[in-house]
Length: 455
Ligand SMILES: *Cc1c(COP(=O)(O)O)cnc(C)c1O
Image: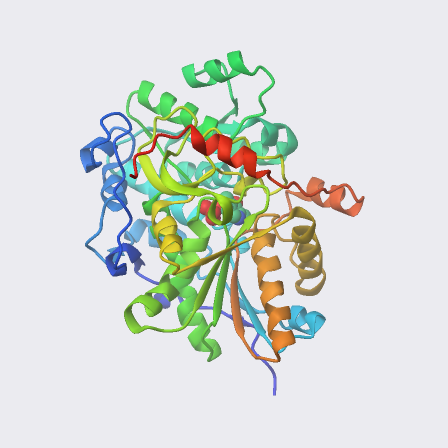
């Protein structure tokens, strides 16, 4: 009997609404707070920064399903559904009884899951007459996705790109410029935030926190301009649930239900996307399913961070978010998974972690690339270093299943391909990839300066 390898949905089966998990959470996340007044945040507070519809989604705790606009669904159809793939060859290489499935978000035109939120964010801005948008990007995946989305919906985009990536990953900049975006290395002299950081530390190579501050500042100074963010916030995770909602149907087609769902973890959007629709079964039907966030050992906010209110950016322009954080001044090591070098986790995921509804593991860089090599050589896809955290976690679970002699169904999200990350692979192949362990003192030092708002 021939085995089905890829499961794909018909156009009319693509989900028509995103899933808002907050509605089903018994313990809701603590509220976002205004950065200055420390009052509970209202839609009006977010409106200067974000499109109104996105501000509403950010604070929506009542609607379980939020309809995907037709214009966005139409663009989703260019690449969705993404395939759910049974990784038979990886299973064979591991000699595991586990069934390993991956959701392949790397087939999006831009090569990652980021487009799932870039399209609606650009759409909602356009719909309310916004002409310009700004954002930050780390490794360049979010900037690339938003550049394309801005072009689709006719918006001008300025991107602050973390300086180290700007130089390490010049092709991502070329992609953004191909779609017509303006790309600025951050920290830059174009904003007060950038000038302050460069004056203090002239050689600073940048961080997502700094780039966010710069992008927010530009948005506030430019007429008819909004800011957009590629992760962390609730509305971004909401848009990404399209991943798990499709996977839910595709696992049904495969005739199996996952025992374990895994996503790599930067700010939480792709992990939320793949896992929240399955968490729904756990919250509402008591279904047994383990949800695992895989983060870098060098940036371990969920496994070693502190749960408290913190800013999403370096300067403190964003709302205060109740999060697992390493401190907003945390300067992460220059690891190759640029998209995971962020100091904090979104508020929903943080609450879920606090309530033990999800698990987190941290993985070091050498294990990431080992997993990436095995995946590439078995399944034929060169994975993004970010996604390889999920692959490594899936491999660990598959090997555990083998030890225990148990058949387990493992589902992970392949958040993107690594075809523009080959410099990192070159380093690995020449034996030049090192692990970075983060000393406890560094975490303690960064976290100790945070205001204690949670008593
Ligand atoms: C940005 C990115 C991530 C990390 O971001 P999340 O919001 O945590 O999903 C992971 N993988 C890829 C390929 C990315 O581009």
